Length: 271
Image (tube, rainbow, N blue to C red; front, side, top):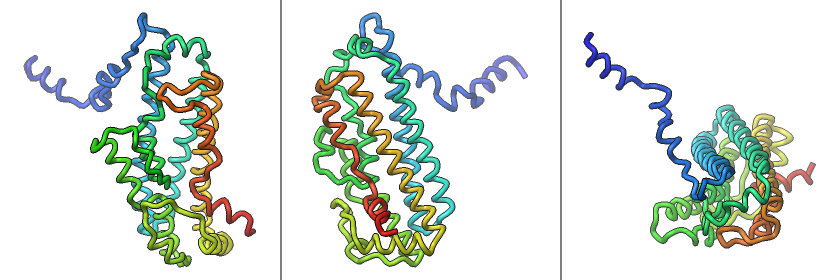
């Protein structure tokens, strides 16, 4: 084999770097500060990592909705466990951000201009998949853009809980017709009949009960991340407005203690 063939074979081989597009990935961190400010690199990497994890969670949620709607318990449990573990990683990343003092953050904060985590398209889509229905969620996105359509489409189709309802029916648990035939574009409202069926499932169907508890893990994990996010923002910028024009910590605090699956929390009072 001559050197030209050698070189061609080497260049076409899949490597760690080519498979993961490492060179391109490492070019995506572009601090805007003069200097640049040392801590801006950390800020960028953490938030880019959040977006990667959001992408992964959306990927896993799409998979688990398919599994639920075909009645598969064990495979669904595995995916739910993965999502819960990812949420733990999201929380732990707050610890990294909190190594940055308010002075260090404010040394480059003005370079963000109107950029804000509030604008994350993937997190808005994630909220929609988990059941949030709010016409204003996509207002900050350009009309008719692919980003806006992603969020709007997610709000018009079955949420994760709607897929759980299908799963429950397939496993012999009664669900009222106003829930199974509801308009998916409208907010879900906790339902007494649903809670009655959930209570029966908890008492009589151990596998379904286990799956419902994994759902609660995810709900709790999201609420934990929201709380840590609020405290991190308060610790970093106090009560100042957010860079994207939101009320900062005050807005984030308003999202706390709003469960994703209200029936799963309400049913605790029936035992």
